[in-house]
Amino acid sequence: GLEITGVSLTKGTSICNLVSGLGDATIAGRVLHVNSPRTFIRSNGEEGKMRSLYIADKTGILRVVIWGEKADLLGSSEIIGKIIRFSHGYVRKGYNGRLELNIGLRGNIEISPSDISEDEFPPINVFFKKINQITKSERRVNTLGLIVNVSSITTFTRENNVSGKVRRLEIMDQTGRITVVLWNNKVDELVDVESGKYLELFGAKVRKDLTDHLELPVDGS
Image (cartoon, rainbow, N blue to C red; front, side, top):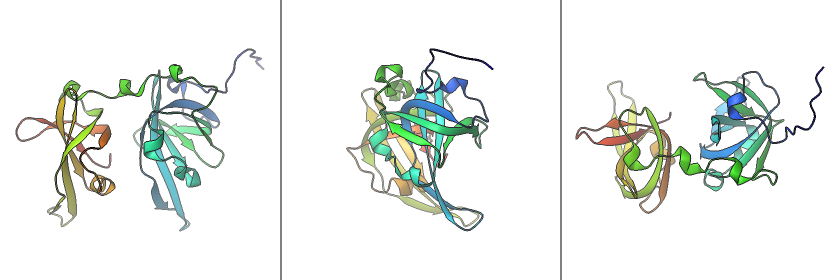
């Protein structure tokens, strides 16, 4: 019974204003990180596909889950840093209790919409720390750097006879260097990693190694 005039909703709402249960949400944000597509088997035996990514605006960071054929539309390296608008999505709580936007059959994806200015969103470097800014007090951290050293892959067997893989990298920026420790599926995802390429880390853990230096373990989480 309300009439609202002079307000355009085409650009979407802010991330901080989302609530669980929205069934037709429009959200725009700058892409911070894109995960690889994953396949799964539904209860009816059919194969499904999904891809998750993270976007940000001035009010927060949001996980977006894309289902079905649309999961193949977004190549990870091509869209990082770009503005994307998702429309006709639904909002619900994810496995960690945080809100996430889901894009299914009804959903639309627009890369670099012409009616949205880059200046409306913070630059991507706001969400990533320089290496010398990383401290042990942080549980998770986002950073990026140039790969300067790559170790060989090491395989091991745990006490429960489950095998695993680990690989160490060293990255650097203008402020310092730090070791990145890849575990299991992340070793497989970056099997072709090599020195001279840039590596972006999103949500990496922070811990001290045996020599009391900080390192960044990266696993499935």
